[in-house]
Image (cartoon, rainbow, N blue to C red; front, top):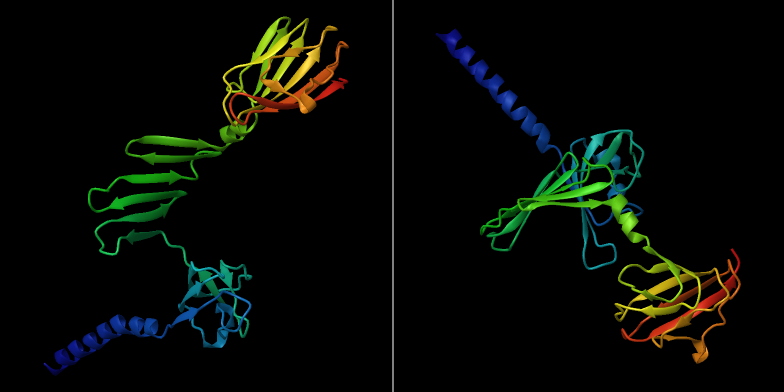
Length: 275
């Protein structure tokens, strides 16, 4: 009987040891606070490495000179990594193999003060998902930053919106409109593009259509005859006089115009340019 009681006591002590020794070890860790990351004795790197234990945590609330602080969360690891703020911070004193590593947060939630509604943010495999919380706002929107090359896809229950960086780069270029050959008249429409090419072959009157305030365009004229172009009264020039356009074949004239009122064009040009 005594042996059985002793066995039970020993088993109990062993079980308690298993349960509480790790807890006691974790309790030895400390939680630190700092107002900045580096470059000061009061910053995170100013904490003496000799007083740190692997597993310690730190919160840095840095105001960065503004009224909206930046918050960093760190955990201390046994590491020899080079300092690379803000990802890795090394103590200035007694660093040894003590390094603060920035914590990755895979999910968090933001809520209204009363907690009734909010947004849950999670990250996984190159994707960030925002999910509404409360009051029927349960739609999830996912930003896929990784799966598609040169593209970010935003997916929701209503469909997919694609942001293609290659296409955006193309859209960012100005649109060149080839106007062909003009022997009588040609109407520039700024809604179709911002750059136009036009070959003159006779008495060509250059007109404008679809004009609105804020529109501008540039035109390159290629002369293939000996007749200068003419312009409608919407086009105005410095000094109130048209430039002296080239009348030599294979020469270029280039002019740019802008409208501030949707009616009148303020223009200037470069004439008689060689190929």
